[in-house]
Amino acid sequence: GAGVSQSPSNKVTEKGKDVELRCDPISGHTALYWYRQSLGQGLEFLIYFQGNSAPDKSGLPSDRFSAERTGGSVSTLTIQRTQQEDSAVYLCASRARGVDEQFFGPGTRLTVL
Amino acid sequence: GQSLEQPSEVTAVEGAIVQINCTYQTSGFYGLSWYQQHDGGAPTFLSYNALDGLEETGRFSSFLSRSDSYGYLLLQELQMKDSASYFCAVRDKDNQGGKLIFGQGTELSVKP
Image (cartoon, rainbow over all chains, first blue to last red; front, side, top):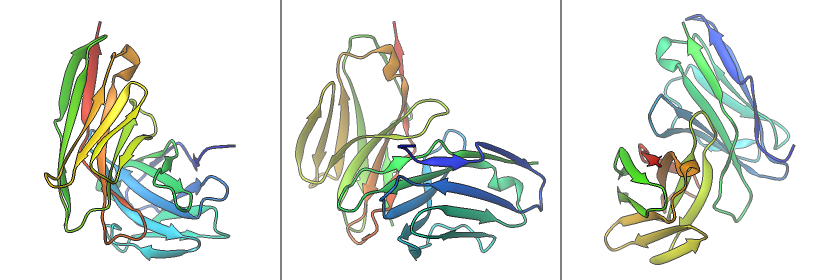
């Protein structure tokens, strides 16, 4: 497809379980970002990838959160031992080199029971 | 650090003009962006200002004053479909990666 895709669209999990969220950026976009959005709030930056490396991980809230990107394309955000406060919509965005616009995916709505 | 302030809610009628303000505090500054997000949808890019002045794109315009650390989004000829949340976002000057720091969003309600 032409846009950023994310899967799953919804994820319900029990407290303490691990979850993996996937992002497929727009082909050719070298920069990839993960954000988190709680209900009625703005977007909170989590991590930024340039190619396969992550020069900025400053937004990851704890060491339970990690992310990787392979082949300069797909990225996976992993949350270990989920907590109820992790419940939010996790958004992925990609950006082409030299352009300011970020293209967002539809997000994964995570609910931790 | 960085912080942005924008009104939480704005209400206007169809056909009217509405202005959504954004003030920011950053240690450095590279540019101000605006994104629109419909309920349950993905944020979509509206505009980007790196320099002072007005940028116009159809019914939407965005303004920046770097000296005042202030910008606004102007929506003209409002339509019902413009009901959405609007976010301003700052790209920090020291941030080579282009990560955005978002405001809390302004929920615009357009009434008939």
